[in-house]
Image 1 (cartoon, rainbow, N blue to C red):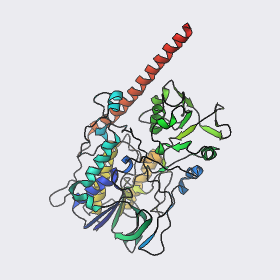
Image 2 (image 1 turned 90 degrees about the vertical axis):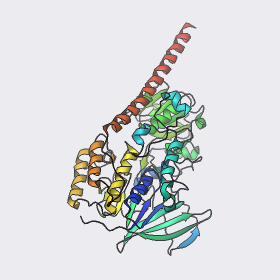
Image 3 (image 1 turned 60 degrees about the vertical axis):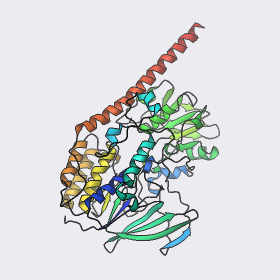
Length: 483
């Protein structure tokens, strides 16, 4: 493919992916204009904290991923200042007051920017004085510091949402909306390329369960997604069911122990456990594993499971069921099986190399993966690197579908981190005095070791807590037997 001639770049999002994209583009020293649009009031992405979370209505609508986050209506004439739009854009994050990362900080961080060593007393108590996990505040500041260095903060428009991105006459036209207290200001700007770094932990997914929406309507606030979880205290003395066998389900179920009514019910039977953490968290004696929910009777607050078991007098149901990929500002780009198809190396859209994505992958060495993607995106857009022919890009995707499947597993880098990182590094090449840029170091296998060791540390914590609880249970049983 021919080298690109890009002088004006728009970056959508100032979270972990957008922050490193800013640095990568700036270090190329090839662009006349770099503009960053962030719909929140500050950088940080999913690590920003929102004290409150609005109640989600029409829960059943979220079961249809194609309708969960439709594009908003754009004013007929732009620029325009009109009454504030009211369509829910799901900008709140899933952070609760004592949330911490569940991955070793060294495995998460960018290659050149170490994460500060700040540990909470809670994490020390759980994992030891050398705990590798960090409070959400550390990650929030880490990202903000990256955005605010070297004058990058001047590139960012906060409280500004990209509502549409479309190619017209060889240029990308972005329709932008800046939120005010009572009105929104709409306008357009044109660019040569667009970097989509908007994340995918935004729109909650609610499976279609008979009676679930009626339960929430009858008892407002009784059904939430873990995105709206703001800590355990709300559930003190309540009978709670947590739906989801992955990380957020495990963390939530464990967090409720000793606060919610015992046992905490976890819908995990028949569901695949998280590849990194397994199902150890759910083996606590005060967590009862149950099968999928068949239906809910609001009149009696009874939940019926597919295996015939029932639980009556349920107070709350927490859905730890993941998120739906949405691109409401790119309605012309399809989402398939909860992933973005037609991306070469998970970065370059095969329909147009000036549309690139940073962060369109699953978890694992997360920030570093974003860094590698941002650097290759910046190099290609700067014209310093050329992509292989379209036929080879399409072949890469076909081969990966054959290996991983055409769904979310397609986006998971595990266990082939080195192959992916080195493919990008070699394509990106080395910066030089005449061709500057951010340098990517060779892949270090210790990154994976650190990642796995961090996961094993959490598993040991769960196993230890489970064993201690089992011992207390047995001791209490022995005392009762003697009475």
